[in-house]
Length: 437
Image (tube, rainbow, N blue to C red; front, side, top):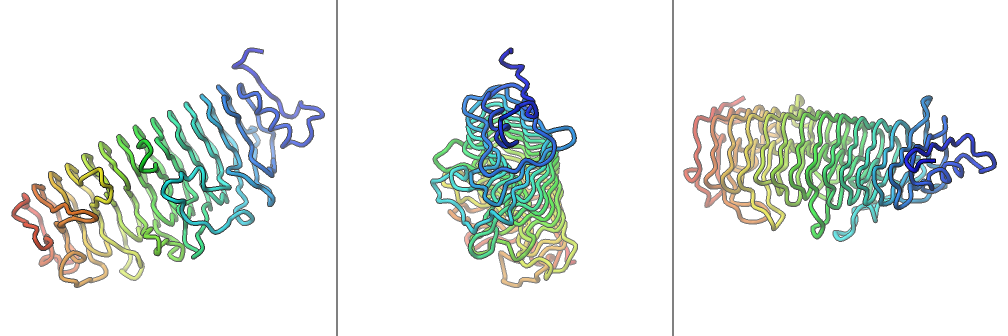
């Protein structure tokens, strides 16, 4: 047979033992089309696409295939893809049997990637060039639904994830359950997928500080519902576009929010060093936390996004600022960011916290601010607050703050404020409309 045209029909493997054994034998070819059998295939250990596989397509049966972890399952993932090229996974379901396999676990040490720490994932791919995952439904996964590490040219689309992720020893989420791309993922796309009831982050890029940044990625058209941590987090990355995603109930359930670990929920979060990136046209409702966190974000654009909360202050126990700048990564400064035409409607505290220089805060609508009626006299109750710094000093200066609509609790008096030692006059501030609401 030609190398790239091998077709393995599992049902024709007479004498090969169980369906699980026949499936493992079929994958050892490392190439061609492997058709999964119809019905349920119960797995007691990892199903592996071996190192060096090239041009392999793993496809579910037309009538449906479910790969289900048994109660005795042990392994890093139900389906694990070792380093290879041009691997396609499509048209099947995975049941991770979370009820039997979940074990309390925290976050890994700072020098250990998640792929070497988190077990009982749904799909784990490492060192793959040219990976496509489409039309896969993952439920009840104890680890990450999909974890892609050190790979490039990755397309994840039309995925559904339900009821996944684990907790730490305090019963809080440990960031797992969603889709994670880590350790220098490059040229990736996560498109048109739906994630519901995920305890940790929905879609997340992450790399160790000593590893290459994730780069040239697109996260677009996805839907998030009932996410316990962040709907989307862009971590340690460059050249990432986050566009036209939607979501509702970010930071739910309340009891699983990782308060002790500082995991306050965010609709669009940032960490590490992130530049030349765009967050645009994303829409979220009912966010119990922050709308947009820009910790490490610089030289990029945040435009035409919205977060709307329709409840009272008591409905958002972790209610926070709408948009927050920060600079915890030592390799960046919070400079040259455009924050334009965003809508924050119903923030627990203030509207936008700004540090750094050369930023443009223009044409935003910041409505129903300070739902908590905080009266600390400064930062927490202000519409736009010009800070002296965050993790590191970075006084707000040479920023343009114009044409913003700011309303909420006592906002006519607390519209734009500055930290001690920071001069409003050192910024270009004007034509902002401030009112009580």
